[in-house]
Image (cartoon, rainbow, N blue to C red):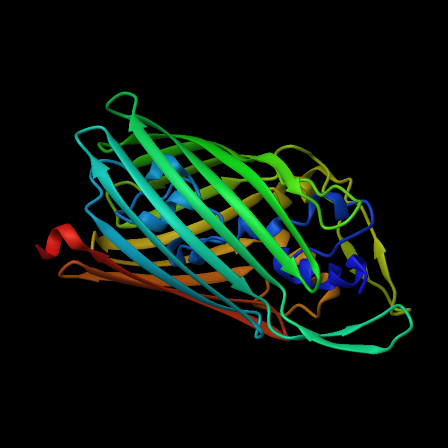
Length: 337
């Protein structure tokens, strides 16, 4: 089976339709799928949310710190109906200024029928991805913290396999007095160490900015995350009346601007409970060729903590034919001792 037959799978993984020009940078788009239900409820990408949550390390390693108790977290995601993703992560603070975490993610996209170049069935296969991660953070000042996240990614699609190494570098500024958080992350710096075939597939490098702040003294928080900052114009596919897919680059200033931004709103009356809602305009426009609905681009989530245990859930329905549910279960071992 040719590697080009795997491209529909990759399109589902990244929630982005693929073009021939984009194939070289799309093989590892699963690295951008978060393992945090808190983040998924805030649009799937948030690098500045402040929470005692070890799963935040895959968004920005600077979000974990010495305040983190010994914590283990499990993640499960039902992805667009056929995908089943699972992960586990452990982390803890070190002394007064540092923290570390390790994690493993397994992404299974369900059974797919395989055919050779003559259309003859060659049986079914299950494409899978595995990510192994290690994170470290350290306080720079009372308000600034930096961190690094190292990742090894392995993909197996039918008889093809590939591997890549990548790293995230992040910093976070947190002003507790004004409840303001600001972050910068250089994400997925690295490259492929084993190819699928002859073609070289790039790791999706990105520069991201994030801002989150409470609205006055209220329990409401707003967040704005800017991503895909390595390029200004982001083309997407449009489904036209002749049932063909065509690329239509958006050249308008505001169209490109909002495809870079994710907006979130969170209600957090206490440290033990939150409800959030987000809107991702890029997801909505990307779904234009996949029968989007009124919920496309929106996501919602909630979470609560009880006696050392935390539970979080988030839901999104990018298109009519599929929805996504993510749940997190965490245990702070230090609080139970």
